Length: 167
Image (tube, rainbow, N blue to C red; front, side, top):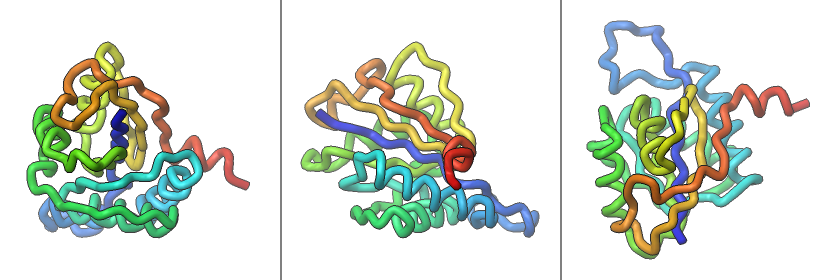
């Protein structure tokens, strides 16, 4: 059985409005949230075997901070198609994943995260605030079999919920 983790990038900085969207870094709040989600994933599991990441600066930084804080390591592939992706684009990237990978993390953007999660669990209207993380167990033996309605949402967590639980 396969598991997909969907992580939306953390809050990005708007300090340089002339900067192209793809080059916007994380805001300090985004760094803190990414680190919080990385620690949560390490405790809650499963940690990823492989990561597919949008090439945007804010997604790459989200992945780096989450992995560093959580202490988990997985090979990461920057996938240009994930920037500005639709749920169909995300699904195509997932279907092409290495068959030996059991848990795949996709780090991306809205609305692709919520649309992909909703499509996989079919019938749910899910919302991904910045740095939200979802875990979906898939009723598929291989990534090439992943499609609408094959998933079961195990959890969807936003960093602000976890912040309330921290001392």
